[in-house]
Amino acid sequence: MPHSKLKAGEVAGTYLVTSPVTETDIITMAKRFARRKLAKGRKITQPSQAFEHLQLLLQDYEYEVFSVLFLDSQHRVIRFEELFRGTIDSASVYPREVLKAALAYNAAAVILVHNHPSGDPEPSDADRRITERLKEALGLMDIRVIDHVVVGSDGCTSFAEKGYL
Image (tube, rainbow, N blue to C red):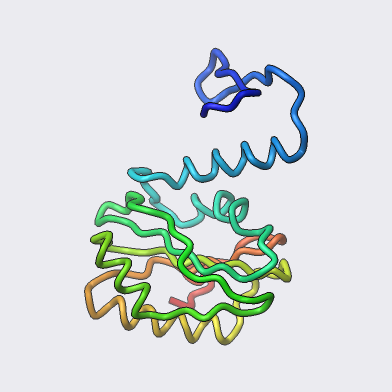
């Protein structure tokens, strides 16, 4: 990963800091690494593989952001995209727009993701309702909803792990 304050180490996946770094530099670098872990072609065999990357990317927003990880039939990442932004406690999510994006990327499956600015990753009733609507809409086109992950500063909650899907 190119960064002016980092140099690749001798062991793959290690880096040497070449000059002093600030907290902001560290967070910026970490977010770049997280985006790379969710880059096109990366295989996601279990949604939990993506949790820490998703948490890093979404936990600091002061408003809700609804994103989708679009996957091919082998569960390799096609694209990670933020689709909707909302307020401090909600975001309007339009199934039609999610379906349009999934079809445009030729996705076979998706992992839905959104943050809770409050920090509590526990899904709300509204989260469960929109997940059902999205599952139904995407299912009409044979696009599977593998998981819906709610991100908070306290961690991530998986709908699949909770048995909500």
